[in-house]
Image (cartoon, rainbow, N blue to C red; front, side, top):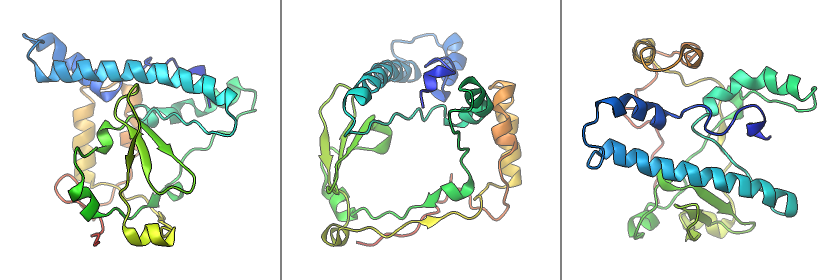
Length: 225
């Protein structure tokens, strides 16, 4: 799907850009301000991302044996607002699939803690801008800069590499949700800083008072080597 068909890249601000807009008027020294420096790096990264997005569009028409995927993770929660728009604009030729709870799976961490501890210059998910997956290869090839070199990462437990298999993840059957108190606090805070048309996502968020607060407690299964 060509997301630029119904919205220009950069037409809506991401969370980092919105936060910077609130910060900028009160900043007295942008040269030494950590927030301003962080935003400058963020700006450089998204400008390169736009360029690479267009390059992938061109490559996808030339190399049919290789798949190219682009994901704007900053705007993923905004896409549901455009479901009807996309279908109408394309005369019903595009199938839009709204994501349901059962479309998501609980993936278990099968990474080797031993390999992670031994790795030097460790790469974190937040820094990765491009991932390449190769058939019959259990390693990932990643970039932390759009114009940088691919780096091979081996992270799986040896038993999975030897067996050439990973157990299927468990399909979600119901929303995890957050507590009613936390939902109210989030909406109260966001109402002051984001446009009204972005509130429905939070207002419709599933609640569950038995849900563990992930801010303080990591709710994942233990992984042994």
